Length: 425
Ligand SMILES: *Cc1c(COP(=O)(O)O)cnc(C)c1O
Image (cartoon, rainbow, N blue to C red):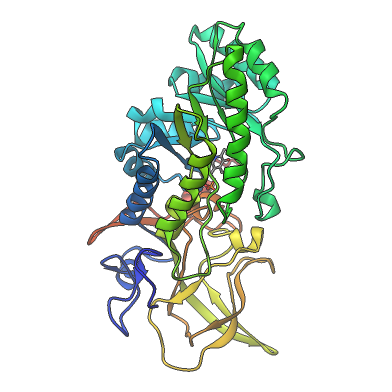
């Protein structure tokens, strides 16, 4: 595909060769593990996390990887081994972190608008770094649970900076009309009230303005507002030690030459310039940017059929494996694992699920494909497997992690008995 190695780990070692992940051929992986198959490059995940860590090397910082983007235990372990912490949004995600990297519990921040008492208890027991609190009511519940546990809870208010981020409406979160966070104008009063409670420790302030945000500008704008808030609170006796800038940095799903290193540098510059007056600790919560381009969904073509003017390429992967096209009208590049000679033509690439929304691409210009061929849906490492389901009683795909020349199964393919196990007649 002739794209620079820094964009995606998927490439052809020479003309006419099968698509590879690093040093491993996707053809051999499909033979070994079957399809549909998620394939991830451990090397790229490590590289991407290192980009953030290098960009913020000038201050004390912690990368809290957003678990919801891809919660594979092996990926969590890999990131924890590189010093990462985690941003979780449920008790289940905390259990994943504890299973994969118990030593990282103290590097966990807990976000989300609907934490239950049981989830808060679990997190207090695990002695996580901080709770990103999204309402006054949640702060009251946190104080009550902390008192029961006789354990002081560190919290950050997740404030809503009222910043518009140009992304899909379902994943934009930083406006006052969204369900997330606390109006930034209310925050000072809440911090001051909390200071009277011995079970609460004001640790920081957090924001998260949305996902798949391609420009650095809204991150800078949000941080400006947060920086002002921190400066305003200090003389009032609320000394915050950390600012959490959230996640949301987007990738380019179209451009093969996407330059991840300059994107992270721009992002870091916008944040650092807005926070110039703040000397404390910086937390960031990237998810997509770390894992999206490291992953592909490899699928086999079952049928090619023509209906009227349209040609449909029907694959063994479906919307239950990768819902992003159906849910967000998302674009994924599709690369035949082995290129056939011949005229590229417009086709719809669709799955077997009984819904017209079950498509990966419409009117996509694709090189000729035949039944039995393999296709790779690129940039599928984030919000792919994590949002998969068993719709149509389809077992979930297997997952493989490639590191150097080694490939290892990190999640076996589900079986029908896995799916039926929780049910009774
Ligand atoms: C989803 C989410 C993230 C990660 O977002 P990405 O777009 O994947 O970087 C970070 N923080 C919070 C609070 C989130 O909800």
